[in-house]
Amino acid sequence: MARGGDTGTDDDRVRVRPNRRGSRPRTKVRPSHDDAVPAMVLAVDRGRYTALTDDGTAVHAMKARELGRGSVVVGDRVGLVGDVSGRPDTLARLVRVADRTTTLRRTAEDAETAGVERVIVANADQLVVVTALADPEPRPRMVDRCLVAAIDAGMDALLCLTKADLADPAPFLAQYAPLVVPAVVTSVAEDRIEGLDELHDRLAGRTSVLVGHSGVGKSTLVNALIPDAHRAIGGVNAVTGRGRHTSSSAVALGLPDGWVIDTPGVRSFGLAHVGPEDLLRGFPDLQEVTEECPRGCTHAADAPDCALDAWVATGRAGGPGRARLDSFRRLLAARSGEE
Image (tube, rainbow, N blue to C red; front, side):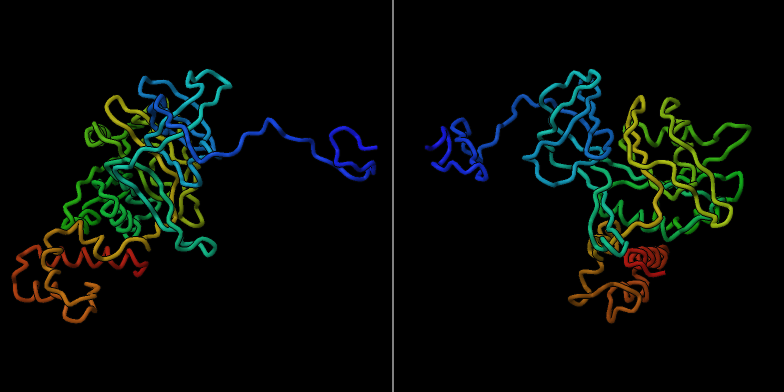
């Protein structure tokens, strides 16, 4: 005799799923979430997001499944639903990501993920390239790559040179004079950071991303600008001359009149996603000249019939023209990883 709810067999080895009359068919119609609370992502940690609502409440959230696998990064403007009280042990749902005004990206260069683009920060308007003048020694090619990334992202760039008490900043600054990139120089004197006021003025009213090698002093600057930030500070390895990683993830920290986004120390900054034409946007004077170049011109030093060479050779470039072209080609080589 058939048992209730089965298919007529009395064999105990046969498992029969009960009828699921209460199950609703799936639908592709998604809720509009018109009541979503706007917020800014401050930190990302293993799939958990810390966001600050426009009324100043810090909320922890998980990303909604309907957003798919797209990345949400520090600086993103998002919409939250659910419990947005910010109370302990509560979790909201991140259901919307607004269009980005800027996107700072780098291309992975390790063997397993080479060529994969990674978004670092969204909606920042200034990239602060922090480099030490000594201990560790400055690496101009890394600085060049960061400047390329800023141009590609449509962000302003600022050089911040630390540890000027250990080395003269003038020779390093001379390399970047043709690029007309503003610079702030800091040094330590009697446990006080000189140049901090000027740096603060440059950050005022901006959303700024600090990028640089480990050990150059990013976290020291952040702690001086925002005393309650408590960013870990590391030294320099005496054997390799490189800094030790202290920050493990990007985090946005509030100034009285702006935002600072501190990022982990980087060893490489891949730029495979940036083409010569993208880079030219940062050199409008050269971009106009390249309209005379043959189709497919790379604008590199060995490019045949490049109009930029004629522009300099004929004197049309003027006094700073050669230096501007040399700087552009140096950044072009840095983009492709060449020395």
